[in-house]
Length: 244
Image (tube, helix red, strand yellow):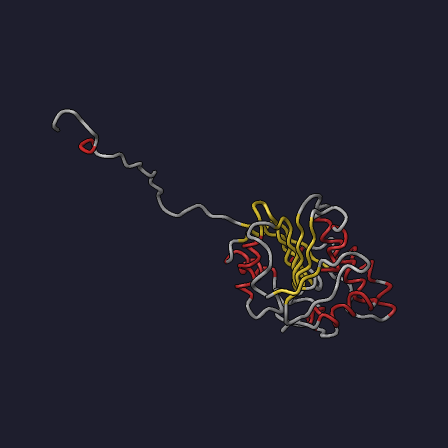
């Protein structure tokens, strides 16, 4: 079940807890991908809170939003780059994406396998994808006051297994959202301290969400490949002055 785009916008852009979550997720993403100069960057689900750093340097930025969720114009004050799309039929040519960010897309999808196949299709050679999902053991997945309390939360092992089944190779892991999912003043004041401490613990002990960076696997043909033999015309078909 997808969340409504208005609810997502209100959380990330109009609430103090949402802006803190945006800062945590974006900071962790920039540790993995500090730049995207000359590249094509695509976000799916509701990834707009994370894509703004790439607007000035990437060759192209696109924000794909699934039909059941709805779409909003983004970024504000600049030419729109957000697109309403079918969940498993993106308006992107095969192999044209360098970086793909998925936020609030996988855990709410009823066709997760087909969605991962579409991710694999659009990624180009050497392309990288960043999947951000709620941590099933974290506090954020247990509260429906935030978008991370909806859909199917994952453990790191579950997400890795799902990615490997669809020809992705998990490369790096990061945790995020270590602060308490509460907008109360005391918890908001301590949010920065929780984030600093949380970044020092193993990813398996991640906070409200974790990130998995994966690359696209392209397998060679299976079995023994025989070299093709070129056919030569028979000698009897060649014109000759003497009988053959």
